Amino acid sequence: MVTSKKQETEIRRDEDNKIERAARIRNVFSNQGTGFMNFIRQQGVVGLAIGLAVGTAAGASVKAIVDNLINPLVALITQGVNLNNLKWVLEKANGSHAEVAIGWGAILSSLITLLATALVVYIAVHYAKLDRIDKKKEDAK
Image (cartoon, rainbow, N blue to C red):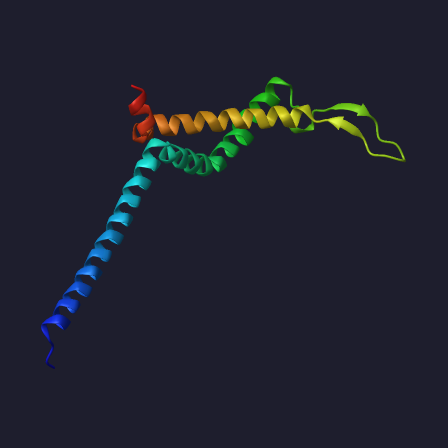
């Protein structure tokens, strides 16, 4: 196939344009990737993800600790009373309506679970030195 100089110039120009467009697209994605990584480090998303993962994984362990260690200790102190059954009855049940009560024992049990969960997460993050990953803490120093 015989091509003229003009056609060759147009072909080269088209190829150069394609290469230039590809380079611009590559730069956009490269800059976006770098920007995304900076966002993740600066906003503490890594710390949030670690906290979520460790908290979720520790949930079953914390529940077992609360159910099998803390609640029995509280029951021992309260002479065998189950926390979840403790309530203030505002109005007793009668034939027309159910009992109206505030289950303060269940609330107390839930707060104990919350504090135990926070303690387990703190210990896991602190002793595994996962808090050093967060850039926000580095910037604060």
